[in-house]
Image 1 (cartoon, rainbow, N blue to C red):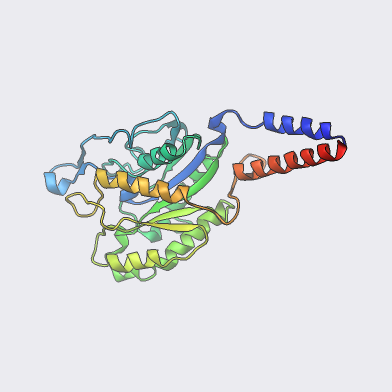
Image 2: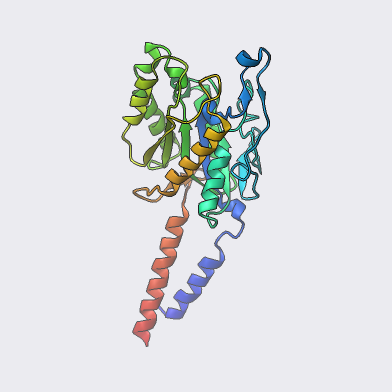
Length: 307
C-alpha cells in the first residue's frame, strides 16, 4: 500500500479528534460522606444553638470557579462548578467547602493542558459503608450519576472517596469495614466495566465514635491495584471535632490532586459510554495517541523504504 495513503489516513484520524473539550471531559466521581460533601466553614447547630450555617467564604484562587471545571447537577446536567459542590446532593445537611474544587484547580494549576474537568458530586453526610453496598439506594444513585456523566462524552478518570467516620461508633459497623469497602470498590469498577479504574481514598482524620484507629487501619490495609490512600490525619478540624475546616479541605484537595497526577495505572483506563444500543467501551486518550504513534511510525518506515 502506498505511503501516501497512510499519510492521508493519519491526517484524517487527527482531523476527527474531538475539538470540543466538553465532549472529552476528564470526569471524577466524588463520593463518601460529610467530609467529601464539604463542611468547611459550616458552624454546627450544637455550637450556635440554632440551625447550622455556612460562612460563605470561598478561598481564592484554590476554590474559584473556572470555565474548565464543570459539575454534574442533581438533574444530571453539566453546569459551571462552584462551592458548595454538594448543595443539591447532600440536601438534608448544611453544606460548605469540600475538597473537590481545590482538587480540580490543583490539577489544572500543575497541568494547564489537562483539559476540562467534570466533577460528579455523590457524597451524603452521615452514611455508613453498608449504605453504599451494591443494591442500596446510594449505590444505585452513584451508578446512575456516574453513567449519566458519560452520556455526552468524556472518560471517568478516578473515584475520589472519603468515608468512614460513621463506622467508628459500634463493633457491628467497624468489624467488617475493610471487607465491605473492598467489595464496594470492586463492584463499582465492575459495574463501570473499568477493572483498573484509579481510586483515591482518604484515611480518616476524625470519627463519630471511639474506634477511629480501627477504621483507619482497615482503610490503610486495603491492597488493590490502582488504589492510593491520602491520609487526612492531622488536618485541622472545625470546633465540632469531626469535620475538616475550609483550610484543611483546601489542603486535602491539593493532596488528592498530587496523588492523581502521580498516578500511573498499570494499563489504560477504560470506561463505558452508555447509549440506547448498548455500552461500547470508550478508552482514554492514551489509547488514541498510541494508535496515532503506531500509524505515524508505519508511515515513516514505508517512506524510508520507498526512498
